[in-house]
Length: 84
Picture (tube, rainbow, N blue to C red):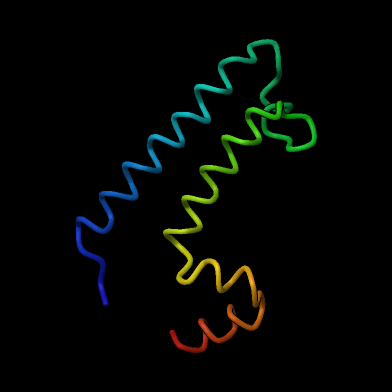
């Protein structure tokens, strides 16, 4: 079933806000290289948290039954793909 405009618009606005937050946090570290800010082993904890919030929002929108997938992993993915 195709998505309606409102179903796309609301998450898109939420993604924009969360993505802007990632950029705003990144600006707080002007002496860090872009490589350091993109590497999860060297990025500041505040930036890691901002990325996690954005990632979760994207996952909740793009992956049907997100929590179910987290619980059953590969078996959920395979059954979902078989239903496509």
